[in-house]
Image 1 (cartoon, helix red, strand yellow):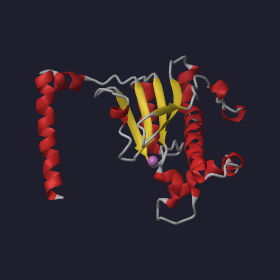
Image 2 (cartoon, helix red, strand yellow):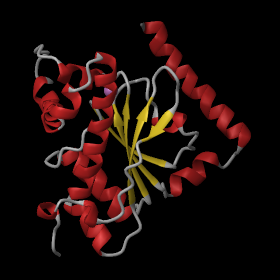
Image 3 (cartoon, protein in one colour):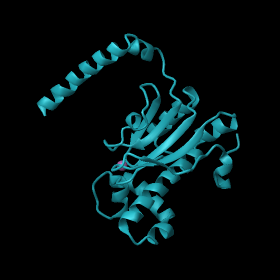
Image 4 (cartoon, protein in one colour):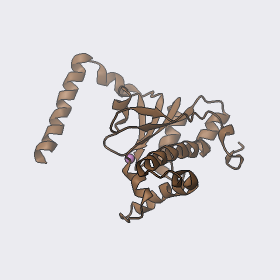
Length: 211
Ligand code: CO
């Protein structure tokens, strides 16, 4: 472990050197400002690194990650990231990125108590309950697991759209589109789940805010 720890600090020095070899102004330019076009809301899973998957450069992706890429509208962390991304950085796209094989989704499908995290997983169980008919009708467990990953992403995209932050941006004519993806751990491939929301008209009437 000590070797590993020493190694990552050495890796950093090497990375700085290589970056400066390619462009002597690399860090100076990055330090002045960020104008990322994209907010990525993904899972904390170490195998789903935001920038790497989409070949993005530093400064291109504003990131929020938590267990099972949830958009919980009372989560001050998520709301703060979203507010800053939409109202200050003016991102053009927000993508909720789930992934097949997600441990959080798996945990929500069974009844084992894991600890404090049970209370976070409960948000995911709520999604299961919303889509119980669809999910329970899938006999194969892997297929059901995959479908749950996908409906959870779609549900989080709609949760984003329901926030006052996104609705207010749309109302003022800001160009921001919400998307949902599912990433394949064993293929590296992103599946676009084809929920591309650009207006509060996509929402159930009860959620539509008047400003
Ligand atoms: Co996950």
